[in-house]
Structures are given as C-alpha cells and as structure tokens.
Image (cartoon, rainbow, N blue to C red):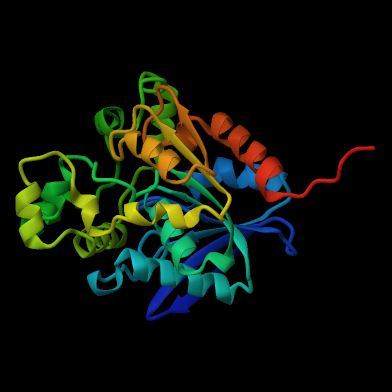
Length: 299
C-alpha cells in the first residue's frame, strides 16, 4: 500500500494506492464520511484483476482541514477528484463510486468522458428524488448541526434501521465489525455538513417538498443526463433494502441507459460494498471481462 497526499486549494487529499504501477487504473470513491476501508473488498477484487487501485479520501474524511461549504458542490468535488487523478499521472481509469462517491463519478463521466474507461456505480447519489426523510432536518442549520455531530461510536440500532438490509441485519458479528470503524471526527462532521448544505435545493423548493419524503436530490440530480453515458461501459449495483436511495432509481437507470449492466441484490441495504462483497465482486469481474478488456480468444 502506497499513501500519497495531494494539496489542492488549501486542502490535503489522501490517496491510498496499490497494485501494478503501469495499470490499468481504477479510482475508488467512498461514500459520505467514509475512507478506504469502506471499499476494501472491491479494491482487492480489482487488484486481483490486474488493476492499480487508487482510493481517494475527500478532505475531512481522511485528512484535515475539513471541506468548506463554498467548495462542496458535487461539481466542485468532481473537479477536485479530477485534479488529484491528474497529479497521479492517470489519463484514463475505471471509476468506482459508492453513494456520494457514485454521484461524483457520474459528474466526472459527464464532465470529462475521455478520462473514464468505465463506471462501476454502487447505489449512487444523484439519480432520483428519494433520500432519508431525516435529510430534510439535516438541511436546517441549527437542527442539522445538532443531528450531524461528532461521535466516538455509532449505534447498532441506527445501522440496522437505516443502512443494513434484512440479509445481514441480524448478523451480530458483522454489525460489531462496522461499529468498530464507525467514528465521526469533528473534521468529518464538518465536511458532511458542508456537502449537505452546499447541495440542497433552493429554499422555496425545500418548502414545497417539506410534506413529502425525500426530494433533496433535486439540488444535484443528473437524472436528465443519464442517456449521455451510453458510450461509457457502466455497471450499476443496488440493494432492494436500500433506505437511503431507493432501488427504483436502478430501474430508471436501466431504461434511460439500456447499454448499462444493472444488477440488484435481494435483502441488501445501502452498505452493499460491505454487506455483499462477494456478490458485488463477482459482478465486477464479469463486467471487466465482458466490457472493459479485450481478451484473446483461446486457440
């Protein structure tokens, strides 16, 4: 494992790289508040396929200082990742993103498609209107500040209620493993707040959406641009029990981009990369073989 730090616009961005230096390259983008650990199974799988993997940890998620609201729009985060990729000397890569990371990967594919050899999206942000109802409260400054606060250890009840699907909800060993890593530092908390507050809809639209569950993604949705991704090999993975982003967004993506590979895991929630790593990695391997590599035909 090689660690490097790229400084950009006053931020320090940590990259954890591993695998053959000559590539091909895969850039991994974890979800909100997450670090390289959250995508470790997928990084190992990609290295087994011959990729050099590079996990990019956003400011505050890896190193301080935390993100500021003025720099936390999805488009700005995409530009930040592209700057890091350029500093690493990578001209073209497969981008794998989960949740927030998936939304950033989508932005990158639309902004600079020549840099994207393929997309692996795991329950990505930015495809629909559904989010946790509590997200509305996160957008209210005083209430959001109280709810989005640092903590030393998360709770199993929260994981089971919102993030884990029924297939692993009663797996006490798995829940305990997640809780050992579930800490939110002050810097991570400030970065999460910055992203939430920078990407919310205009105030008048928030008022219109207030009586309804979800709706907060309208501030950064790419729903109308999915068809533009047809020339980029894309794999989309989702869980039926996802309570952060509805699995209905996967069906929309399938219809808008018929060339994409779309697969749904039964009983799996929003933590799909860790809940169902074997299932996800098998689909990544097939996707690589069928869509990303030109393999010689056996004699």
